[in-house]
Amino acid sequence: AGLLLKNALVTPPLPKNTPTDALGRPLPGHGGRMALPPDAAAEIKHGLLRCIADEETAVRSSASTAIARCCTAAVALGKSLGAFAVKQWGELLPFLLQCIVAGNEESATPAEDAAAMGALVTLRKLLEDIPNCLSRDAPASSFQDMVPALLRSLRCPSEGRRKEALACLNCFIEPMPGSLVAHMNDYLGGLSALAADPSPSVRRLVCQGIVAMLNSRTEYLQPHMVSIAEFMLRATADADSTVALEACEFWLTFASLDEDVMGNDMMEMVVSLFPRLLPQLLKGMVYPPDKIEELMEANALDENGGADRNQDMAPVFHKSRTKGHHDDDDDSSDNDDDEMDDDDNEWTLRKCSAASLDALSGLYGAQSILPPLLPALQEGLGHTDQWVREASILALGAIADGCKEELGPHMAQLHPFLLSQLTAPESLPQLRCISAWTLGRFASWAVDQMHAEGGDTSLVGRVAEALVGRLLDRHKKVQVAVCSALGVFVESAADLMAPYLDPIYRTLMQALQMYRTRSIMVLFDTLGTMADYIGPAIGEGNLPGIYVPPLLKHWNEIAMENPFDRSLLPLMEC
Image (cartoon, rainbow, N blue to C red; front, top):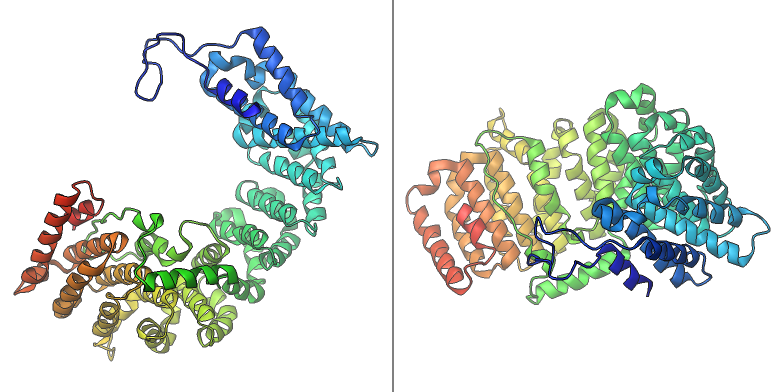
């Protein structure tokens, strides 16, 4: 009933015979939705407040959702739902505050505990949806008193109440009302007290609050950065992956701050943690056991020619680039989304750890990164467990931009190792994928060897051979990764690829016959990159006879079967 009421309130009916468009919205100039009569609005608001204090959790949840959605919708709908605007609902925040304060008392009854929980959930939903509106339009006295009441709720024995109170306080960080500034030391003390809370949900919110403060209110954390960074380092290794992920965001956020905001003291303090932090980030890049099990099942499905999943069907558009402009940052931004595609679009501890290492290496450079990282990296690269090797290769690719020059002396051993991991028959598909991506990250180094005095002039050919040799891999993710890496390598090598175009185009046309939607679109993007960077050489001799007829045949077949097929656009662009 509560959800039906909420839906009816946030989408009020239109007056009879109102002209509407195809989506049911009134046409311009034909009036708006019907407004709720004042007496009905007052009765509904009274009933909703009564329901958030109900002893039944489901009733409280529905009522809190209805209140939050109505207050949020009132901002957009204006007159038709104006009675539910925070400014017009003067008793809302005082009632929530009253319930929270009553629940904080030691003598609170079960009914008062339930009402306090309902009030906290409602407040949290309002702060998530309309924090600025709430701080601007709610009664000033109630809003100022809310922060002390929430701080007291952090000491509540109920895990649910602690969690909701902390979530509410974290929502105050962005608008930063004066009441939170006045009680900042108490808030930071509350975070410290909850740092060892037995509930992973509470510990995760502690990390979330610290990250939010670091991102927008760094000045409040600076006096406490030593103890905060130590806590976040321990939390990055938390057994609960949600806590570890939230804590890992701290290092990524820190590396993204302006250097004038950090200050030398903060920079040096974080560097002092690198001997413990960087190996922990490397550990965070290893897939967890449940994900490994899922990936092994997906590998078996791919091995048996499984159909494309929905996430495999995302469109890929060819990006036209200027020949000769080899920007490593462009390489990473264009291709980083593909390198960990096994996680689909989920933001994971693995991705956050890799992004943090990437950002920290860019900020500090090789002199600070390599000494504490190399021992753990070398151990991981030589590990017998392929999943540990895979994570270590990911870490190697992550530091490519920040440490590429200093890694040069090691590349004589690392580059052949990457080629061997890509081409070895026993390598896991994920290991082949990450090896291809990392080879792409070091493409400029391979090209530099062609021009260096005493350099290996056959290196470009060997990389091209290794990548082309994997284009016909049976696993879709390897196909995508290798195609993407080949495109990145072409960007760096440009016309140095000309001697190898015949086998490359022949293999790409073979791949065209076996690839499915996602792989085909990446293949077309790679063909477009080759045209952009290699230039006239792709039209010389018998090369057009290798790739033009199969592409035209593919176009005709697909266009006849389905003129709206998503692979036609990237084919047109290539």
